[in-house]
Length: 391
Image (cartoon, rainbow, N blue to C red; front, side, top):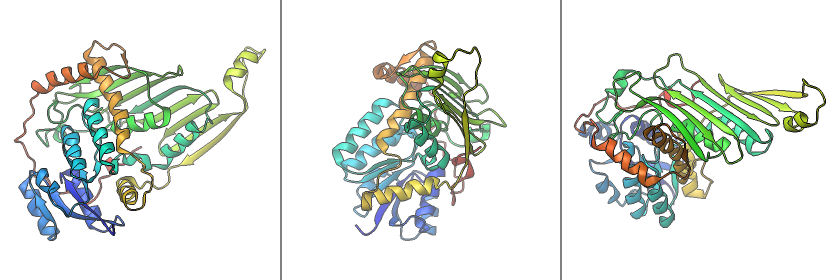
């Protein structure tokens, strides 16, 4: 294959940025041959700017286009699995926006379709390209922190105004979006959290609905997680704080990591704290510690994921963000919702998918989603700063 020809399904905020990036020649070996959107004005504008594009207002028609080798899915979350499965069944590679879908059961179906198809499956976890998170993962997975004790992530700099939520009938509704801050903004952080520290075995959560905005989903959430090795985690997020905080701290028996303000701080102990605690004859003591810090280098973000996806298809390069891994962060957010809906009880992982789906359906059935409300905002010609890691 000389060039990977993609079709972009959904050219709203994210999809239009992907369109301009790829059509602008920024991704080696990738071109755009078709786009799809239910907003005819967006299609008209895309065709005027890129005359060679094939345009469709139905994603099924785009999948019937033999000139498309892969699809980039950038539509509302509840459609991700449905469209992705159809794309795999039509023989296409798939790159899906986060989250993988709104439920673990839907993500499982999409993962199964990907395996059956034998095609490449990626997900837009663009923050995995950030050098500080990659280094943190290397330190933790390499055992340099010893046995993990605790992780705490305060990620409250996802500030949004009421105008943001009013910009589309699907936003901040159970039917249109499938959740709030945990499903829209924080999937990046939930993914990085499990990518670095591993998956928990239980989640207890408090999810505050409409605490800061006139919406029907949560705009603040606090999670407490437990892990099989005895370590614990706390995750706090919100779209109602300004100025917000982005601070990740990970403690282990051999030291501590703190990532904040674009700096990774690493305290490395010369001796294992557990061994010192047990063997020392002194009531209070200091442990020899080495300190290093690392500044945030380049972050290829969305362009990096697109390039990696193209290279995976064309030359077999390993994916930075395999689509099948999207189920991990979704499992955490599903468990958090189930905990909230069950009286803030502890929810074990694997979670009860049938119970979650039943309760989610109740939310969807009573949702105020307005599918007819379409906003004709200007297309994004660049990736907005708020979509990258912000400190």
